[in-house]
Structure formats: structure tokens, C-alpha cells
Image (tube, rainbow, N blue to C red):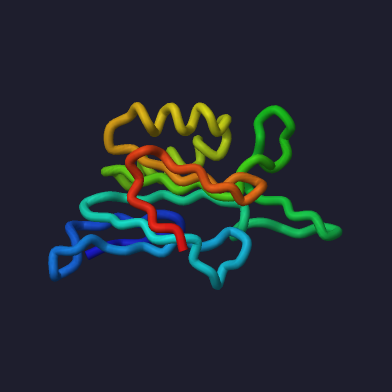
Length: 137
């Protein structure tokens, strides 16, 4: 089975036929589109993004993840998806990874066992850690 709580998913085992759960990753630019599919089995997923919790003022979007230096919303990323073995850690990592430079995110994900990441930057470019199971749509 799996449990979902807004920005986190915990997959317990796989589906009844033994196959992994296939989780659709929402396109941060259009909530009715799927960016791609991530497969989970005994793993967790945490997602942070600028596209669900925000306010628009005078045509400008202000989301809830703030840069500690500027005190304004982070601008260089639209979405960070983290997959690992622990739901709390996945959720925490996704927020922390939203705040740090992309190069550091990929370095950490590519050198930490059981930690994978998908990042969509402000220009809609998708970055993947080396071991993530992601099928782009």
C-alpha cells in the first residue's frame, strides 16, 4: 500500500502483483499535466515546489519557500522531488534542496546511498540524480 500526505508519499512494498507503485509527478506549470512517472517500492517521496502554496499580487507569484538572504521566495527552482527510504527525511530534504544551489543538490544526491532527486529549475530544465527511476512524459 501507500500513504500520501499532501507533499509526501510512503510506499510500503509494491502493488499486489509485485510491480512498483507508479507515481505521477505533477507539472509545476500546469497542474493537470504529468511531468513524468517515478517508481516506488519500499520508498518515500517528498516534494517541494512553488506552484501550490503561493499568493499572486499584481501578477507576481510569491510562494512559501524563502531565501534566508533576500527574505523573498527562492527563484531558481520550481520543484524538487526527493526519493529515499524515510518519509520524514524525504520531505525535509526536498525543502532543504530547494534552498541550496543545484550543483550541491546533485552532488549530495549522487554521493548519498538511497537518496535520489529530480529538480525543475526556473527555466523548466529537469535535472536528475544518477539513480532516480524517472520516466519523462
